[in-house]
Length: 95
Image 1 (cartoon, rainbow, N blue to C red):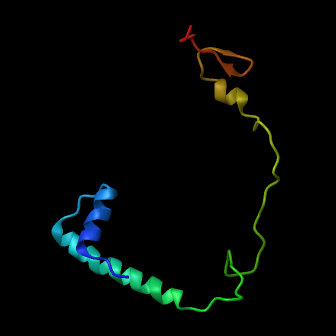
Image 2: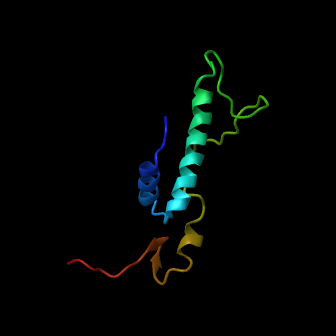
Image 3: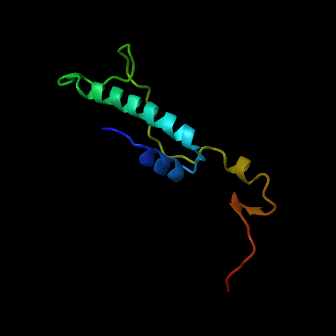
């Protein structure tokens, strides 16, 4: 896969980046180099290889999946002007 100057300018515009003509030409070469490395990686046979999360074998740390309120309700409403039993009180805006 190859990236041309028009593609670089289009991606820069979509990313809302101001790119000069000179920068776009330089980026074209850089992006083509990056894509070349990615193509080389796709040639590696990884069939039967287990995905890794680290270079050393270890289990991922997992937390218990427990639903709770976080014991933060008092802290959350502490700066609110009006509250009632940990709920925000706001003026009525729709009748």
